[in-house]
Image 1 (cartoon, rainbow, N blue to C red):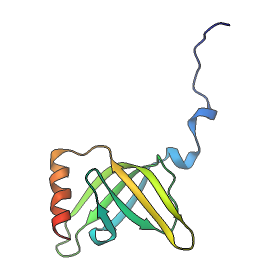
Image 2: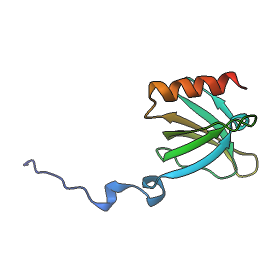
Image 3: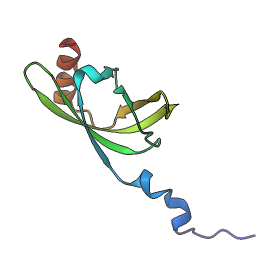
Length: 106
């Protein structure tokens, strides 16, 4: 038996819906803020490992901030909805401060 280099093929790429990036706008009242991410409810499932950008907005003063992350869990069903857990992947100190101020505004 010999070793050889394996080239990436379509069979390793995964489904197309997992490789594209999604964007979602949410109000601060619709999310649970966690240490490194958020949880939110949705009517449609989002596959794990989907890259996503979420825009969070405060209802009172309309402050907005974008956060990029990866979906790590999606539990539920089509009748009751889905609870989605997202972990932020690029969280700078400034973004962390914004997220903390959003958490305090709840």
